[in-house]
Length: 394
Image (cartoon, rainbow, N blue to C red; front, side, top):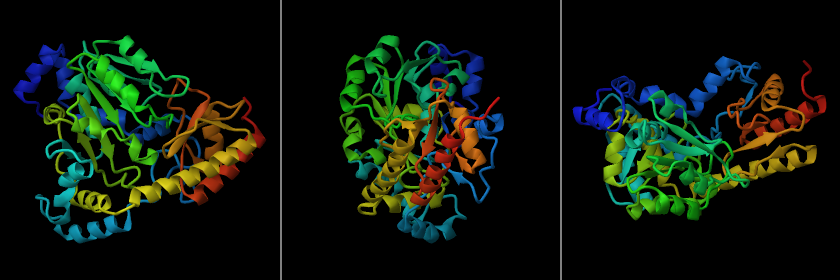
């Protein structure tokens, strides 16, 4: 990616070296692996950490490792993709996908120009790093939390603050850790804990940060928590907030790549300086636009996810496993006497693939994605057998 002269001068003024700027010039493609469920899972698989069992393409394997939604795209979205598919030979978007960005704004009741479409939320998240932080203005986040390597990759300071005892973000400690930070990042619900940070804590950050700092709220999983937990109203109020959304989760479009960034036009412009990622696929935008127009879709999917999650919790309670209650489509689990890696290896041997031990802060835990009822039934049987057999010797 070619940075404009103005953007390069801004980076130099903020303390970046020319070597660091050359890394930023590689574009979001270089940073996205630090903010991508798929890429992070692949890195773990290559490293062999708890992933020595069947490969993901094994048709008999239950793959509940990357927070994917097995409900997939809705019927209306699939039909919309079929209609625009024949137009895919043109560069210029046509047909139903022309509604995408206007619907992003209208569904959240923000003004036009306050929403920007992206191929997923990883690209704008990665772009927020050079847009709002620098070697002298840190990126402050939770520990454990989602990502963090992108800032270090380009030479930025990353400050990680432990979650509270209730697994919410400790916003007082985040401000105290670096009162002069450039960005405070809150994933809500948090990944990997699946827990919510209340509105009053977001407002605390806004009230106590430096004037030119930004609050970044990653709402990849917020639809599973319900509309009462959305924070796009802060965007409507012209606050120093960027809200990130994706269609990968509740909409079941992880492989199609559609997402959005919400914020004031001046904040979105800073993010766009580091790349919009090119045109979105016409199939993805058509599917996303159609999905946004389906009445009750999110409510229905939220209920299905909750039912399967609670079904699994009930089983874990019976067999003596522990978990962190989640509001998302995943949860963190632990079993007394096991490390997270041992659980992952034992479950993989039974063809149930979980997220490896990606969070050194919690070596006893492993993350479980909520799959279909049938998948969670097989998960329940496998984890019961693993506990009965005990941890591997040696």
